[in-house]
Image (tube, rainbow, N blue to C red; front, side):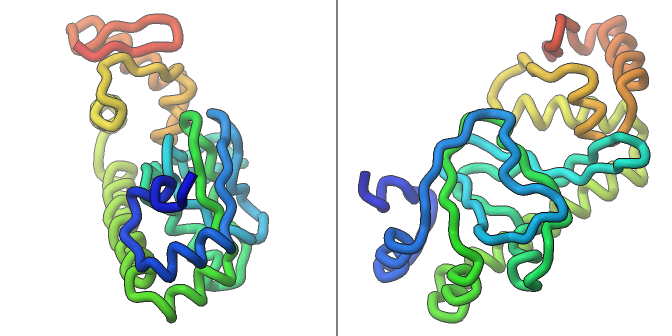
Amino acid sequence: MKIDEEINGLSVEEKLKAEMESACTFIDVEKGKMIVEEGNCMQVIPIVLKGAVRVFRRDYEMDREVLLYYIEPGQTCMMSLVACFGDSISKVNAVTDKKSRLLLIPTEQVRYWQKKYDSWNSFVINTFMTRYTELLRAFDELSFKKIDVRIINYLKEYSKRNTTKIIKRTHQDIANEIGTTRVVVSRILKNMENIGVLKLRRGTVILN
């Protein structure tokens, strides 16, 4: 397959495409696989070509996860870029949310291309701007919104992102995504079912 077909969501110069073809690796990853782990040195930066990747922080003391953002096709991970530019370890975890195809870019190329190619520099800057906005929104959710509002916002966002009202997430999954406990999520979802907002099935929430 030609690289043009592979990176169809990225607008880059022809010379950069040629360098990508020789320097980068394409991989297919099944759902639920860890591709970036907190504490590891970043040797490659992933760009999602197909599928989706969930980026989160883990609170080991509370045994909870807090969702930061999702990486969709044509996007990369801001926190991985931070680690790459700072020659530091990853501060986040990233797991494939569905079967995905990734472009793995060596970190030295990430830095080199930013100086050499305007399109790559713009891609990196846009990644930081987009993720900065998403992280602010996540902070607002955690700091200022009640848990029931955060849960319904999460369900609506999942529904929009996947174009389905059938949300295949357990109560524990949802608790991990929004940084609370399964007991709290179960109680609130049951209340929402009672007032007709949604229906509950085993491992699934169906929005009305």
